[in-house]
Image 1 (tube, one colour):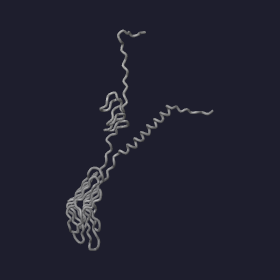
Image 2 (image 1 turned 30 degrees about the vertical axis):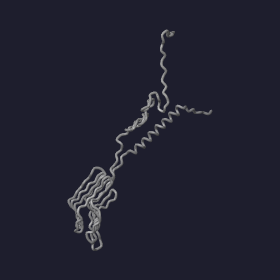
Image 3 (image 1 turned 180 degrees about the vertical axis):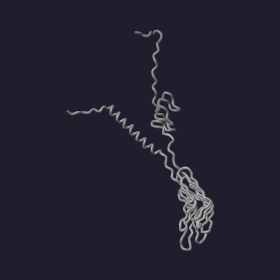
Image 4 (image 1 turned 135 degrees about the vertical axis):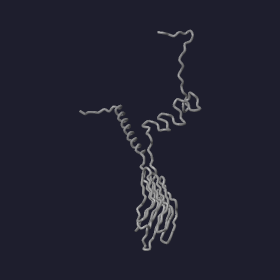
Length: 243
């Protein structure tokens, strides 16, 4: 005996409807993930650093991807005193950074104040240009590239051919983090500022109602609206027929 299976139309429609609901739910999950907030990039700032035979680690130094962090030093110097700086102040936080140095002396030569700032991924320096203070000392002010800036790059060449390089007021920052939507209206609910399902959009009128400036009794598109026939009224001399 061969057994046959009969698929009822109503059961098939219910299964298809269930699959559509499931697909809509999956789509909602994928779309919802796009609205997540982007992570903030850490911003950094430091006052002065030096490399070479008389190195100096970056200080004062701060780094933060959230609330603004700050630090300062009254003065700092390398081991042998070739590089000296005073009045150093730095700040860094989400989308912002700044560094200020009141004065820097390299090899006994002062280069004056140096400063840099960075806001929302765009850096800038207080001074620009290159200055040769002596045959062995060169200063390049304001090296800027996108969200990074160096207030001054100092190069000191020694008699033995060696060199000292000092970096002053160095900052970097990224763009500010983005925030996700404050709320989700949910399936079937209108987005603020947009009409809900079945409601007319701007410039349209509801079905059965005349357009602006139109005549009553006329449908949208020019087709006349049929009125119901009046109920019959009894006339004198005629009596209603009863059972």
